[in-house]
Image (tube, rainbow, N blue to C red; front, side):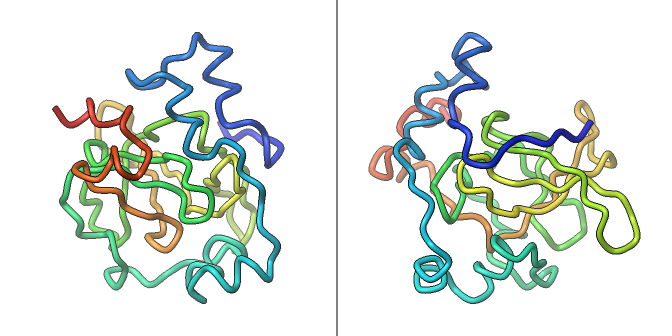
Length: 180
Protein backbone atom coordinates (compact mmCIF):
# COMPACT_ATOMS: atom_id res chain seq x y z
CA UNK A 1 0.00 0.00 0.00
CA UNK A 2 2.93 2.34 0.48
CA UNK A 3 3.77 4.48 -2.48
CA UNK A 4 6.80 6.58 -3.27
CA UNK A 5 5.91 10.07 -4.38
CA UNK A 6 8.37 12.78 -5.31
CA UNK A 7 8.70 15.34 -2.55
CA UNK A 8 7.75 18.87 -3.45
CA UNK A 9 4.89 17.90 -5.78
CA UNK A 10 2.04 20.35 -6.01
CA UNK A 11 -0.31 19.91 -3.05
CA UNK A 12 -3.58 20.12 -4.93
CA UNK A 13 -2.66 18.13 -8.03
CA UNK A 14 -4.04 14.80 -6.85
CA UNK A 15 -7.30 16.29 -5.64
CA UNK A 16 -7.72 18.33 -8.82
CA UNK A 17 -7.35 15.14 -10.84
CA UNK A 18 -10.04 13.50 -8.69
CA UNK A 19 -12.57 16.24 -9.23
CA UNK A 20 -11.49 18.80 -6.67
CA UNK A 21 -13.26 17.83 -3.44
CA UNK A 22 -11.46 16.24 -0.52
CA UNK A 23 -13.42 15.28 2.56
CA UNK A 24 -16.17 17.71 1.61
CA UNK A 25 -13.74 20.60 1.21
CA UNK A 26 -12.61 21.99 -2.11
CA UNK A 27 -9.07 20.99 -3.04
CA UNK A 28 -8.14 24.62 -3.61
CA UNK A 29 -8.73 25.25 0.08
CA UNK A 30 -6.52 22.30 0.94
CA UNK A 31 -3.70 23.62 -1.19
CA UNK A 32 -4.04 27.35 -0.46
CA UNK A 33 -2.29 27.14 2.89
CA UNK A 34 0.84 25.65 1.31
CA UNK A 35 0.47 27.41 -2.04
CA UNK A 36 3.62 29.17 -3.07
CA UNK A 37 5.61 27.26 -0.44
CA UNK A 38 9.35 27.42 -0.96
CA UNK A 39 11.29 24.89 1.09
CA UNK A 40 13.57 26.70 3.57
CA UNK A 41 17.23 25.75 3.81
CA UNK A 42 18.42 23.53 6.65
CA UNK A 43 19.87 26.60 8.37
CA UNK A 44 16.54 28.45 8.09
CA UNK A 45 14.66 25.44 9.45
CA UNK A 46 17.07 25.08 12.37
CA UNK A 47 16.52 28.74 13.23
CA UNK A 48 12.73 28.50 12.91
CA UNK A 49 11.98 25.11 14.48
CA UNK A 50 12.71 23.85 17.97
CA UNK A 51 15.50 21.24 18.16
CA UNK A 52 12.85 18.52 18.63
CA UNK A 53 10.76 19.73 15.68
CA UNK A 54 13.85 19.76 13.48
CA UNK A 55 14.97 16.29 14.61
CA UNK A 56 11.51 14.81 14.01
CA UNK A 57 10.62 16.50 10.71
CA UNK A 58 14.05 16.63 9.05
CA UNK A 59 15.95 13.71 10.59
CA UNK A 60 13.07 11.21 10.96
CA UNK A 61 13.20 11.32 14.74
CA UNK A 62 10.52 10.24 17.19
CA UNK A 63 9.41 12.25 20.20
CA UNK A 64 8.75 10.61 23.58
CA UNK A 65 5.26 9.14 24.08
CA UNK A 66 2.91 10.80 26.58
CA UNK A 67 5.28 13.80 26.80
CA UNK A 68 4.24 15.74 23.71
CA UNK A 69 1.86 18.57 22.89
CA UNK A 70 -1.10 16.84 21.26
CA UNK A 71 -1.43 13.23 22.40
CA UNK A 72 -4.13 14.27 24.86
CA UNK A 73 -5.57 17.29 23.00
CA UNK A 74 -9.37 17.06 22.77
CA UNK A 75 -10.17 20.44 21.21
CA UNK A 76 -11.88 20.77 17.82
CA UNK A 77 -9.63 21.92 15.02
CA UNK A 78 -7.12 20.81 12.42
CA UNK A 79 -3.48 19.79 12.53
CA UNK A 80 -1.15 21.29 9.93
CA UNK A 81 2.47 20.66 8.98
CA UNK A 82 4.72 22.71 11.28
CA UNK A 83 7.02 23.46 8.31
CA UNK A 84 4.65 24.24 5.40
CA UNK A 85 1.25 24.76 7.03
CA UNK A 86 -0.40 22.23 4.73
CA UNK A 87 -3.56 20.75 6.36
CA UNK A 88 -3.00 17.14 7.40
CA UNK A 89 -5.43 15.84 10.03
CA UNK A 90 -8.66 16.83 11.82
CA UNK A 91 -9.67 16.37 15.43
CA UNK A 92 -12.82 14.54 14.27
CA UNK A 93 -10.57 11.67 13.09
CA UNK A 94 -8.35 11.60 16.20
CA UNK A 95 -8.63 8.79 18.72
CA UNK A 96 -6.86 7.56 21.85
CA UNK A 97 -4.70 4.66 20.71
CA UNK A 98 -3.07 4.27 24.12
CA UNK A 99 0.37 4.81 22.54
CA UNK A 100 1.04 8.33 23.81
CA UNK A 101 1.16 9.90 20.35
CA UNK A 102 -1.65 11.63 18.44
CA UNK A 103 -3.40 8.99 16.35
CA UNK A 104 -5.82 9.51 13.48
CA UNK A 105 -7.98 7.16 11.41
CA UNK A 106 -7.36 9.09 8.17
CA UNK A 107 -5.82 12.26 6.80
CA UNK A 108 -7.92 15.39 6.46
CA UNK A 109 -6.64 15.91 2.93
CA UNK A 110 -5.24 12.62 1.61
CA UNK A 111 -3.24 14.27 -1.15
CA UNK A 112 -1.19 16.13 1.48
CA UNK A 113 0.05 12.90 3.08
CA UNK A 114 2.63 10.69 1.37
CA UNK A 115 3.32 7.09 2.36
CA UNK A 116 6.75 5.49 1.91
CA UNK A 117 8.29 2.16 2.77
CA UNK A 118 10.50 2.44 5.86
CA UNK A 119 12.98 -0.41 6.33
CA UNK A 120 14.81 1.01 9.35
CA UNK A 121 15.10 -0.77 12.69
CA UNK A 122 15.10 -4.23 11.08
CA UNK A 123 11.43 -4.09 10.11
CA UNK A 124 9.22 -2.87 7.29
CA UNK A 125 6.82 -0.07 8.17
CA UNK A 126 4.92 2.63 6.32
CA UNK A 127 6.39 6.06 6.95
CA UNK A 128 4.10 9.09 6.63
CA UNK A 129 5.37 12.43 5.29
CA UNK A 130 3.81 15.72 4.27
CA UNK A 131 3.74 16.14 0.51
CA UNK A 132 4.83 19.76 0.11
CA UNK A 133 7.53 20.09 2.78
CA UNK A 134 8.51 16.42 2.90
CA UNK A 135 8.33 16.55 6.70
CA UNK A 136 8.54 13.24 8.52
CA UNK A 137 5.24 12.94 10.42
CA UNK A 138 5.22 9.40 11.80
CA UNK A 139 4.00 5.98 10.67
CA UNK A 140 0.84 4.26 9.45
CA UNK A 141 -0.33 1.00 11.01
CA UNK A 142 -3.31 -1.25 10.21
CA UNK A 143 -4.45 -1.69 13.82
CA UNK A 144 -6.81 1.29 14.08
CA UNK A 145 -10.56 1.34 14.72
CA UNK A 146 -13.29 0.75 12.15
CA UNK A 147 -14.16 1.76 9.56
CA UNK A 148 -10.62 2.40 8.21
CA UNK A 149 -8.68 0.12 10.59
CA UNK A 150 -5.81 2.54 10.07
CA UNK A 151 -3.76 4.30 12.73
CA UNK A 152 -1.74 7.27 11.62
CA UNK A 153 0.67 7.52 14.57
CA UNK A 154 1.98 11.08 14.32
CA UNK A 155 4.62 13.07 16.20
CA UNK A 156 3.20 16.21 17.81
CA UNK A 157 6.49 17.95 16.98
CA UNK A 158 5.64 17.72 13.27
CA UNK A 159 2.27 19.41 13.76
CA UNK A 160 0.74 22.77 14.59
CA UNK A 161 -2.81 22.71 15.94
CA UNK A 162 -5.28 25.30 14.65
CA UNK A 163 -8.40 25.47 16.90
CA UNK A 164 -11.74 25.70 15.08
CA UNK A 165 -12.32 29.23 16.38
CA UNK A 166 -9.05 30.37 14.74
CA UNK A 167 -9.44 28.65 11.36
CA UNK A 168 -10.56 31.77 9.48
CA UNK A 169 -7.85 34.02 10.92
CA UNK A 170 -5.18 31.41 10.16
CA UNK A 171 -6.26 31.00 6.52
CA UNK A 172 -8.14 27.71 6.89
CA UNK A 173 -11.73 29.02 6.65
CA UNK A 174 -12.74 26.26 4.23
CA UNK A 175 -12.35 23.71 7.03
CA UNK A 176 -14.70 25.51 9.45
CA UNK A 177 -17.67 23.55 8.04
CA UNK A 178 -16.20 20.34 9.46
CA UNK A 179 -17.07 21.53 12.96
CA UNK A 180 -20.60 22.92 12.46
